Image 1 (tube, rainbow, N blue to C red):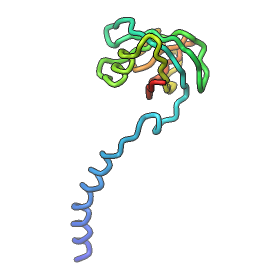
Image 2 (cartoon, rainbow, N blue to C red):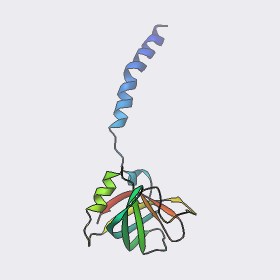
Image 3 (tube, rainbow, N blue to C red):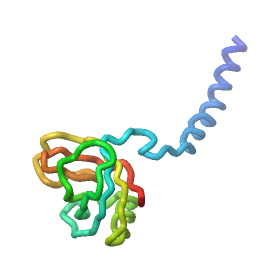
Image 4 (spheres, rainbow, N blue to C red):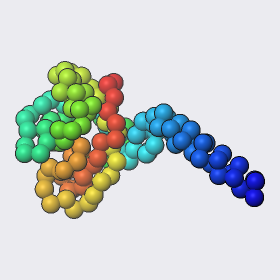
Length: 133
């Protein structure tokens, strides 16, 4: 019976240590999810629609994956300040590397409710990371 009490006490005291230690590990999305599509693109802010900021993008090079377009319309949701800061501060000649994950086929609209874009084949692509080249 004494060993049961020791086990319970150890469990109570060690659980918070384990739980709090898990929060300190930071994994970048690119390390967590492999990108389905990687592109180099030049972007510039074009305005906003009711739910997102819009950036026009010129695809400079497709590094990994396939995509039919060389022009894209990227939407960034207002709550995502990290992506918004990177894209809005990109210069006219800055080339950004976008890591994208396939989101959904047969999108109804040419814009999407995610951080990403819809290609001409109506596939939506979610941004999982952005890096300056």
